[in-house]
Length: 275
Image 1 (cartoon, helix red, strand yellow):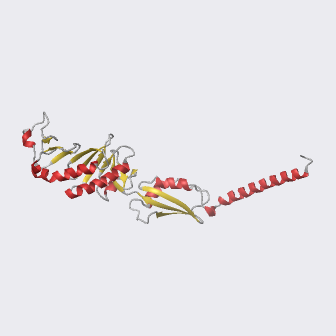
Image 2 (cartoon, rainbow, N blue to C red):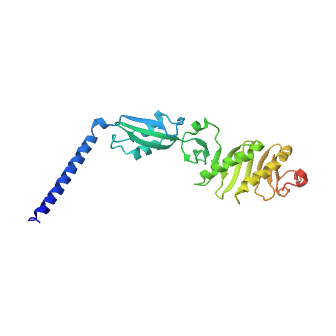
């Protein structure tokens, strides 16, 4: 090799290229560290052009202070995004550089739909569970109480919207909706009544049970001052408790429950027992 001029020249050229590349890289690194490229501004915008109702500059500053490192060239945009998304009420952030010394951060804010579970978390209108000031969320509107197994958030949200429509003809508004671990539904209405709808045996199960309740509900309210619970899980009937009395699906008073004789509890709307 030492007697091969072409090989020696090729090796020398390769070493020279490496030295030049190292020098260029070092020069660029040195240039990138100069004060002229220090970040001087972080400008906040909105992703959907909507006004930020709960996120303000003070909460953003407190939530991201010390988390944005580097300058215009060296700042890690993904780390900056994560820092902003850790701020309460921030759903999503997008970060970009703007020459010569700015970062532009576009934010999307959570919109609370209701509470989720029993630990003070909130559920957004898009089905995201997040943590924020509950009192602040309640300033926008009354928050229904929603709950269900992990991963069921979007399903519960969709069912809640449907139940609002289904109960609207009765002028009743759902205030709470629970999906149990066995995937059985229970809805509580604004008149204090709780309705057990049970598990979905088909796509139309809940709609059919609410429709059946809507058909008999006006006649029930004519005879009872306050209904506490209604159980719609029966195939062709219902059971209810109201003002100290209980009516089973077969019209008989459950054994051991004080109240009027069973035959006094047998309502006959349209000539039929409640079944």
